[in-house]
Length: 362
Ligand code: NAD
Image 1: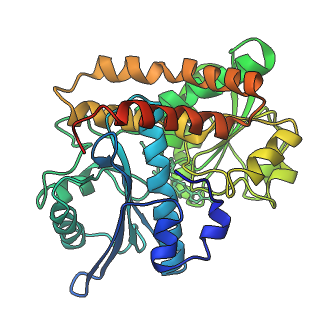
Image 2: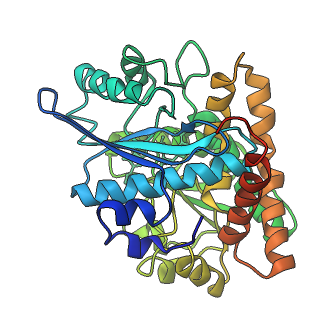
Image 3: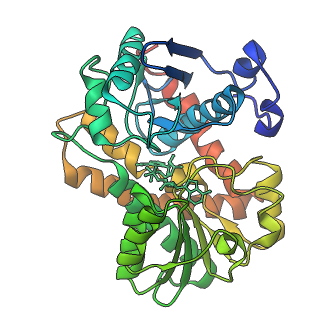
């Protein structure tokens, strides 16, 4: 898996975009009747079928959607590899506003496209897509996970793993993993963000929250968070910044503003450029818990559904191990003098190399 900065990749099109990080497959899905415009990306299936959520977002351009789905699917490869799952990396995006353009027909049409891939890609929930939506998709394909009569919404597990990653980060910085009295900024208080707020408030942290939707933010305030406005998200003095909205929020514009000692959150692809921006965080003395390690609870839970019979205790146990994985990433950084993102990627690549060679799947 060659390492190429995704900042540069944003400018690529066609096969150049796909081969840049060695994606296996990108499928454009169009249906004029329902207005469906979707892209499914499969990055790597060495360890198993590509599993990753479906995101619905009002992308400014098709190019932005492609950029996002390529980054997201690649992140899933690393996430599942590090979490020890027999899954490859894939993801799908629907271009559109989930609040106004999402409906049964559109989702079922998307499901038909997923079915065409015959199990190479399995879909689930992500930004803008909930359990009910996935059940519409299920009408057209068995290649779905996160169903209400099985493992359900993965968000509580994602939030649990993220919460434990914050604790692991604090342990590394202060020697104690207690979050009592710590100030934590949660950006994006949707499915995962809200559950995270609940964990943090319960432990006695002072939690700040921001979401672009007022009704979503209100739920976090009701759960004990203090609402802040957009301009305070990066610049407020806190101990932890927890990105739980979209990706690429760690970039040359935001990193200089941060006044925290730890970044640990649920959002995928937090670093716009995983080398440059990871280095900038380190230069500013900010510890970074790699997103695909911190937010693996959801895929762990979904994997246990696909690899059934589903057992909630097993998912919880596996998610709790994220605490130790984060600490082992930090240890690798110290021993090898590398950045957290690079250490976590090396862990994933090692497993793909070693285990992938022995699998019959391919
Ligand atoms: P969600 O759609 O329920 O919540 C995302 C929230 O972010 C929304 O409420 C949205 O309004 C808000 N938002 C978007 N842009 C924002 C901005 N600039 N500032 C503040 N808020 C903003 O999605 P989710 O399932 O909670 O996922 C959150 C993040 O975690 C995503 O990046 C997702 O890919 C990642 N993630 C989710 C899961 C999961 O189990 N749901 C698993 C792994 C990773």
